[in-house]
Amino acid sequence: DDKGVTVLGLGAMGSALAGAFLAAGRPVTVWNRTPGKEAALVAAGAATTGTAEAALAANRLVVVCLQDHRSVHEVLDPVGDALAGRVLVNLTTGTPEQARELDAWARERGAEHLDGGIMAVPPMIGTPGAFVLYSGARGVFDAHRATLDALGGSRFAGADPGAASLQDLALLSGMYGMFGGALQAFALIRSAGGSATEFAPVLREWLGSMSDFVTGSAEQIDTGDYGTGVDATLAMQAASYVHLVEVAESQGVGTELLLPLAGLMDRRVADGHGHEDITSVIELLVGRRSL
Ligand code: NDP
Image (cartoon, rainbow, N blue to C red; front, side, top):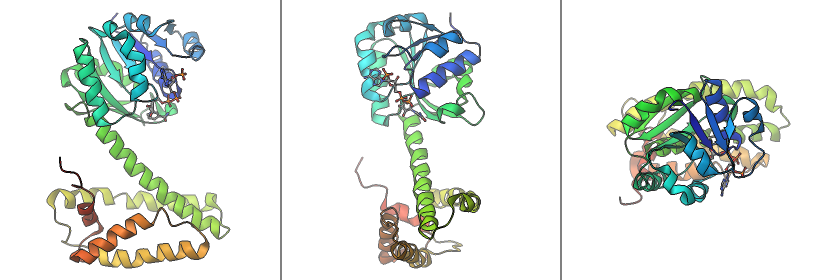
């Protein structure tokens, strides 16, 4: 049955994926290394198998969501022959290199392959807020998109099998920058005995309006022009950033999250770019490794 989906891996995310396919009316077969995690899915109508090989035999479309690249190979290596004619959609987080490796490995075994990056936490799967990035052969994506859309919005990131992973990790890099910034902000509030709950709405409002930075800086990055129409020069920002470090120190709050950016801004100012926007710091980040 071409409408069916096999899901390998029933951790928090794999279970959510299988549940979303079921909710969309797809026949689902699930397998997990450790038995017991399939009970709720079986109650909701999923089939289960005792082996990964039997699960692979059940459907042409096979979605894999395991801990890491290594666990994907631990599950698939022994059953490589069963992959011929299958469409392997790997939604396990990994690096672009790992995605390319798995792509070549799957093709050698006669399987088609898409690599994906899930941009959601498990409760969001199947809701409009979730999206999944996919990369690999466009035709394979188009052929299975209707099924994959059950997970959330499906977005094609590129033909390079590593493209979805690169975008996924770029988005997470942005997210962790925000997490680090929010933690530093809350730490300052707490150091003065303040309530994080009371402060949260204003922090959220501020981060929301400051997220416009992404649009303006992208244009500067693509044109390489960091110096036109700058409202807040790097020299000004580097000078005022010193206060972030000083207040942390005087409040007994750690400065580990702050110092790396201070170092980069200062270096860029010292190199004569103080009149430019903070975006110009990117010149110190890219191109460290010769490709
Ligand atoms: P969990 O820790 O909940 O589940 C891990 C899964 O991997 C389990 O099914 C586990 O099986 C299996 N596993 C681990 N090692 C092996 C192995 N050697 N052989 C076979 N199976 C193995 O993780 P999640 O479900 O949360 O995450 C799964 C993937 O989804 C990860 O790559 C994660 O980065 C990604 N992801 C998760 C998000 C989240 O918010 N949770 C968000 C976006 C992506 P067993 O039950 O037998 O231990």
